[in-house]
Image (cartoon, rainbow, N blue to C red):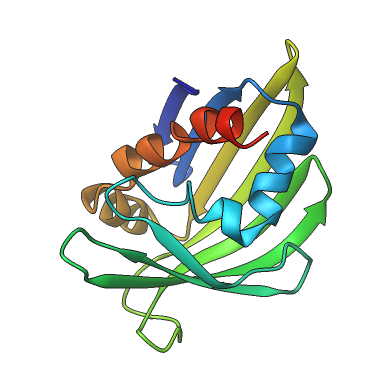
Length: 163
């Protein structure tokens, strides 16, 4: 399984996930840059994603939704804040209403995804910071930790079957 560590730090309002993939950095980057590939691994297997808009460039906005087994759709958005291809990108990630406007009642996550060469593959560090400890706890209560683990653990198999 790619996820090798998950660290929650309430004091710094941070969730950090470390994973290792059996693919080079450039291939892992390509997965995050291409919306058709990304939607195959963004979200747990039971809630597949559909990206409506996605461009991995600074200042761009991505919109997506995840679909539950019952057909219910949960919308979200990204605002890309920094890109250093193929090693890092940063973005804000929030919940959205059906029309993709931000849902101000739910937390916004500040993410930094870093990809480094490691033992012939890639070590990825996914760092998410919230505005408050309460926001972190809210998403943990919503299942973010397990959902993230399931989503990330799909990546190696996807990359192996889609080189």
